Image (cartoon, rainbow, N blue to C red; front, side, top):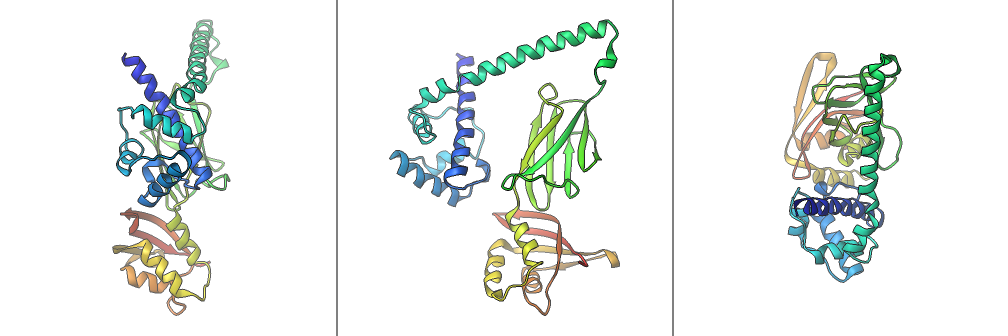
Length: 298
């Protein structure tokens, strides 16, 4: 009975992945479920109602999408979400996705046979045929443009394993399964668990741009006559209690700005800040609460 429940939860995770891809295409909501705003949830609810004549509550979305739950939703809701993704019902979705667990089992068997082969070859002293240390190369692409992302401005940590830059890529010597964390001023934080036994030579990951950080970068590099419009956009993006730090490397110092001072310097020609390079950005209630930047000469 326990194994059946576990398999049902696996199918539900597959359904959530399928639904997220559907939402990205039909509604252009390109976010992880946990990052959905109230507006995103409402947009999804309306679209679900229009297409399937029924919907789910905001509380349900928070319980099953924005948070991790080991409780399987009701069958009628699973039928509804399956229909939204183009399947007849929940049973039809499971039937068409049965190949995935079988393929996983097949791959596991291949891995076992391969491991046995390695042990046998090692017994004959042919270690030279295999690398002594497993290495993992991490490659990032922009989730929207699908172009490669430079790792020079990314902070990458893989548990206690230390990576090293090689030709613009980060290479880890794989010692154990652990959590890979990525931080970058212009991209949203990424956290994913990587298992040593499942990892290949190269790990491909998508990074989602930080829209507000990109907006600040754009404003500091372009001129715009309608400064009132930019002022409204910045007022919405920045928290009233925000603390903003401007680094001054030439003077080994730092300046603290409040929200209004920063906005005025950024949009008014008299005090304009040019060529901002964001070093760190922190959010609270979907607004910038803490910002650290440096102004480049060019």
